[in-house]
Length: 555
Image (cartoon, rainbow, N blue to C red; front, top):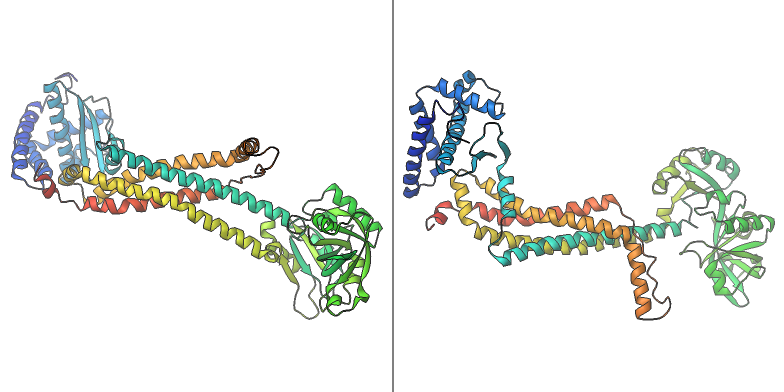
């Protein structure tokens, strides 16, 4: 700005020049005396000198209000209001004095720069030479200083290296957590789909002598959340063919209603159920079960209920003809066989108490809420004669051990990978400790200018947390990208292994898939940020305990 171009400075320019000169001299004297409240003393003295030199508070307030309005900073107070409020008047006078003095100093030296004013938790920055057409900039003081420390070039190369390692460590940990948890999610979904190929979404046992299954199926299908219902009877039996045998779960189903409750109703299964309806003595075997016994379509085998086998009574054994093989899922292909409902009830009629009991297989629209849906549907059925109610079980209850193990595996794997993030956070501690030692003089100056211990602590928390934030964002983006392309990457790795180590498709890993869940991404990022925040507390607390007099004594 050119000297004298703006009318707001002319009425008080001479007074402000004298104020600036006196304050500069007083600052030098106070600093030499070693007092810890240097900044506060100068501010109060500047205010007193300003009042003494202007002699008229109303003129000063009007001048400041015009000055603030031109800057675009609306104070919301009239000159009379400013005059009547001592605290507001003191604050505005200090600010006005600093602006004018710094502007005059910049005019004399021909230099530029900016005015920095810190009041409480706020900083105000104005460019110099001053231009009334530009407004002040307001930012939190701790955020400004903390980010300034982050951007500052490190004198110590070791400090820069440790800071980089801490950020990369957190990024690597977040990336690994997101990618591995996505793979575990996909594996769990695959296992769930394989399980539900043979296991009902929910099962409901009908009491003996109670409601008939067609009526029960009609009532259940009318309930909310129930897609279809079909009857079945299940029991354990010994399956034998030409001297070889296997213990299997034999399930009697109704071929007409069974397709509606299947999780994956393939064309092969539909054809086999159609043949089962036309052949009462037919049986459908799991693929691995048929392979173990060397059975093919058209062969005969015998089935003996387990209860009869234990009692050494082979009179209940029955002969069946193999209609074909079907996929009952990864976990049931080796021990599952299907027969007609009528044949199944006849086979298990003389078994132990409860054997041959008719059950209803339910297919629901939400497998994760199968227990609640099935319990609500069972409540719509007529009451049992003994008043005990209906026994209801969902898929996650019948296979609880498997899915509990999968959940535990996910938790333990996530905890182990979180150690990578913790190692990165330890490097944040080391970086901040070195930074506090390097910035001790700056900390002392901030304290003498009026910054409290909480402000100093917040500055270093922000500086340390910045590495955690950058690392978390970088790791999250990398983890999401890796989870989205892991199938293609594993295909490339598989091809390289097969070409380099062994000819042919020896190594089969391309089936690896990932299922990204945003809840997991949020949890991982929140955990990384929390660990980073906790890592900054101790060094920041040490910085807030620095005594300014001890540091500045030898400066």
